[in-house]
Length: 82
Image 1: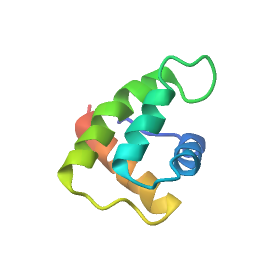
Image 2: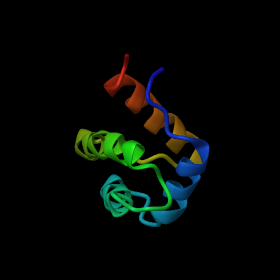
Image 3: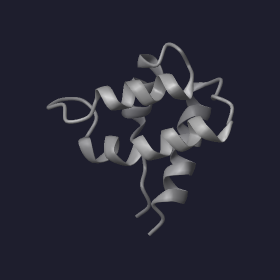
């Protein structure tokens, strides 16, 4: 099964990244690393390189939570295809 970010994590990341930038999202995702509660550490570990790649790619930051989820899940699937 390809990598997928659960909907509740998408919502949480969208809300917490008030900057709505990839660099802001890198900070938010990293803040969840090795935390006892919240986003699973395995998800965080997979997201960090994906978000950093998006930050450096020039990809526009999504304008809606749904588009945000679509972009993250598409990029996760590409990077971690089985």
